[in-house]
Image (cartoon, rainbow over all chains, first blue to last red; front, side, top):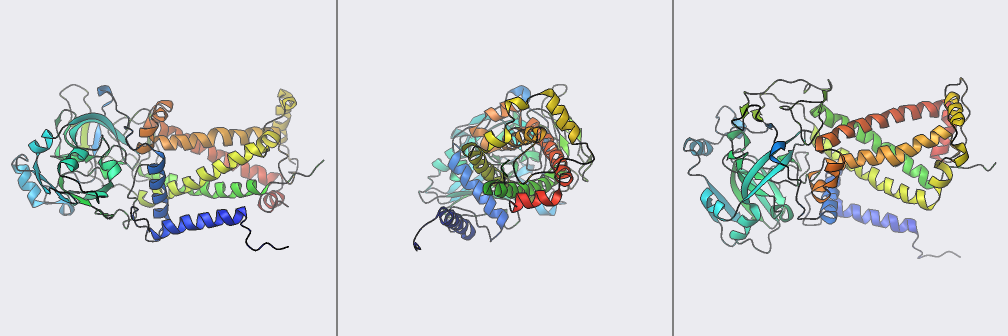
Amino acid sequence: MKQKFLITRRHAIFAGLTSAGALLLSGCLKKLPPTYGNLLRMGDNLTYLAQRGLLSPKALAMEYSKSDISSFPATGNTNPADPAIKASYSKIYQELQKNDFKDWTLSVEGSVAKPGKYMLGDLKKLGQRTQITRHTCEEGWSAIAEWTGVPLGLVLQSAGILPDARFVSLYGYDNYAESIDLTDAFHPQTILAHTMNGGNLPIQHGAPVRLRVETQIGYKSVKYLQRIVVTDKFVDPAHDVDGGWSWYTGI
Amino acid sequence: MENLRHKRWVKGAHFIITFSFLALTVSGFEILMVHPRLYWGKSGNDLTPALFELPISRNYHHGGWEKSVPFFHTAGSPVSAARTYDIFNENGWGRSTHFLAGWFLVLTGLVYLLAGVFSGHFRNNLVPRAKEFRLKLFWQDFVNHFRKQMPAAGKGPRYGLLQKCTYLAVIFFLLPLIILTGMTMSPAITASYPFLLKMFFGEESARTIHFFAAGALLLFLLVHIVMVSRSGFKQNILAITFGK
């Protein structure tokens, strides 16, 4: 006799895969970056979900010893004060640099109770962390350096991050920007670094202050920080996703 | 003698893994083209010595670096330098294709391993029998592979001695090695599992091992195709596709 409502294993697997696919396809999970129907971006989201689900959110990236510090290529934008490089030029940055960044401030905005501007001295008062970590570039190379900076989590707490906050966008003076989720924003090694290998952060590496996200690939670590915006919705300020790059780069 | 045929899950896994391996090879080669230098150790880049370089893109031996600046006032201090050169870089699709295909390989591989253990596939068809472990038999099987007329293949898993050993090496050594060294290059995975960095002597060593494992797997693919052809291409393809 024919059983009409029998759920076979094949049906179950097929239904499961279809619904998982539909979730990824529509990007209907508010916390996920959009895929624009692109198969590769669905794969990126799968990696993001899996790493968030399977990995420990507070686990520290490997910290090295002083003797492991290596030479360090400066790639991407290396001088926003240079008017000859139009894509990354900033007149304000040029002025700040002339005065040795004494007038530099970091603006913290968005879903925070106390939006405002922080001088470097204000930031340092919040607490500091020194770490010798590896910068892993998507190109395939890596470099080890010692960084000192202020944990981003302390800055967000001091600004009174609101309960609806989900993402943190960081904008640089070089017209570059990235966003990260709160797991990475509150990771103990995610710092706003002002010191590299014991000296002031060089221009090439993002002076006066750059982001370090040690649990992701190098391009998430925005240089020449200008502004931090906390949002409740997903924002992709550097257009990683529609530019054909993965927004999440834990791998 | 019973006529063994390939099981359905073996055929399915074989095809999914074949296609993901091909996608991983193409995207992996593209990623290598972006930085065709390999190193040994915890880190490595254009400003540190390479183990070797591969002439596979315009990024090979490029010298476009500004004057380097030392970090410390000591002799032999590590340096910083900026690029004066636009490199070839298609890693946007390269990396995402690699990881998407990686998911297919890892998930299918896990199902295959579980099914292989619980169905007795590994025990019955892949692990050589105790009486097969004789030098003479190994030599005989080896010589057979070079005969003008290779013994014809059956319709399923009645594998030869060297064939069994090779498949075991691919399934239990090369594929796990390439997956684990791949994960060792991930900053997030190694934060939770730092033993990976110790096991493979650092992130850049893992990358180099990943490269050699890929080479070994490509060599296997080549030999596999030659052997499939020589022992009856049509019969073998029908057997692994339809089980006929």
